[in-house]
Image 1 (cartoon, rainbow, N blue to C red):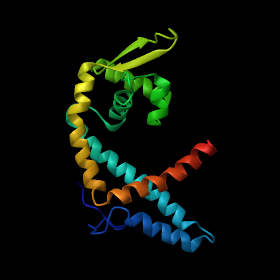
Image 2 (image 1 turned 90 degrees about the vertical axis):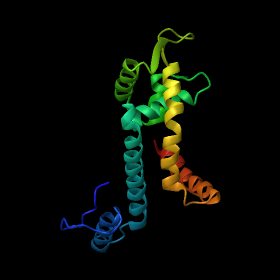
Image 3 (image 1 turned 90 degrees about the horizontal axis):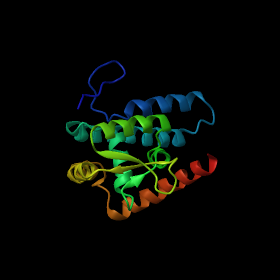
Image 4 (image 1 turned 180 degrees about the horizontal axis):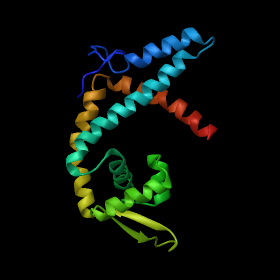
Amino acid sequence: MTAMLDDHGQPSDEGSFAAAERRIEVTRRRLRDYPDQLVRLTRMITHLQKRHTDMANAVLRPYELNYVTYTAMMMMYGSEEQTATPSELSEATGEKPTNITRICDELLRKGLIERNPSTDDRRRVVVRLTREGERLVEQVQPELWRTLEQVYGGLSAAEQRQLIGLLRRPLQQLERLA
């Protein structure tokens, strides 16, 4: 982990979000009616996601995976038949279809998935985890669970449920606006 630097390039003991908070405060003073709490919340969620992705990538690097490719594998693993269409993967991962094609090509080259025509509609493509892909998911999961415990382990089960419920509301609002 790299040391945090302050605005002048000097080592800082503050958390990694402190610089963003200072800038939010300056902006609040400059702009009347600035929604500083909403901006702080949005930037904090983004910051949290970035930091978590970095932690997950560090775990996945020895397996020659990254968080995006692994998330695609998990979306297949989590389906009953361990399959998905590229459009389902795009929706589940939030990745654009062109990136899903690249991800699937990479996983296919590594022997972690197979790509076949759908049995329902031969124009559709279905990707499925191979046995090797399934074993890799099961091998890596405990290591990723430890990162989740490091990040969220300080929250009680009730606090975790409350946070999930609170975050679900803006997510639903975003989906209504889309």
